[in-house]
Length: 428
Image 1 (cartoon, helix red, strand yellow):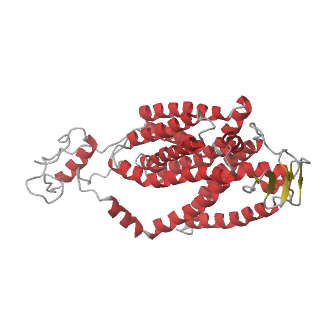
Image 2 (cartoon, helix red, strand yellow):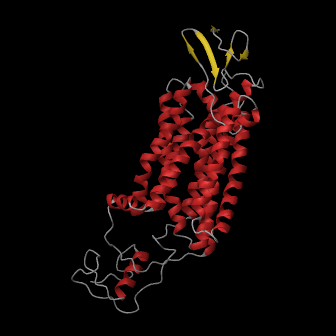
Image 3 (tube, one colour):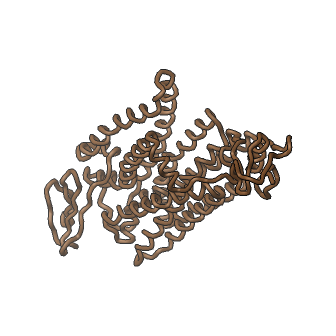
């Protein structure tokens, strides 16, 4: 029996690929592997046309995936935009607040390989839908957690991380199978523009909803509404193309032996370009993840140190710093991606390693800027807009000691002022 188009129910595209292979004279056995016995070539003319999609449909699907990517990264940083109020509500210290981001990232880290494995061997569209349901459901449920159970809020952030992992690992592969060559490069560039845009809008949404409603919980109730629309659009408008559909790989036999997960990892481990790129992205994520999470609070503390803002000791804090930082993230993110892509395109005409060199040069320029922002934050407020978190003090033994690092200034509740020396005073 030969594997021709239509001989395997429900696998039209892959069967067409198998038929094309058999038509060239390959023997395919019962297991679908070349060279097996008991099979002959298919009758001539039975190979079907490769999988294809109208260009406008592919562009529409790409627009939907970009929209979902926007919501995905809004979910990443919406907590950072309301961190002060969340800390006050659950009575979370700075060290435990950092654990919120740690739980999120660790959940994403551990589940990403799992979703990558599932997405490569099962329906990607179904896996994406499950991921959206996970992160939107966890986000919505977190808005109803009482202050007596902060551990549930930490758990919800972990589930959000698991849902985000499914989308971050699978969505780019769908785009890769919808477009080819230069089209694929342009579409992926647009797709990745929504990473800084979504991150910035996460701060903006959290700050804006908090200011409008006076309750940070509503930000976690507005976002799932947008995600419900995204899920409907995904189901209705995004196809699940066969692997390599854009390249019209007709010589992939249906049912061919797939490599195991361990074999895939060993292969990637021998790909040094992949290894070094992964290490570089990890280093970038290490810095930008911490900076992105603590930046709004850093800006707030900088304003307090400069006497422009009173410390936030109540439930509703002034989150205008989150709004400002979010807008800056959106604008600079778009400019950075566009300039990077254009510089890479031009530089590649004279150097084939343009992409990696542009990334390296950009990071080398950014590193001293970030360092100077941290050092100069106590001197000028403008410099602090590129910095990260100041250390807020704690209550110990009935005494209040609130210090801001690296300025060394402390807040005295007795006088209501920030001083440049240590200050201990009885707790009110």
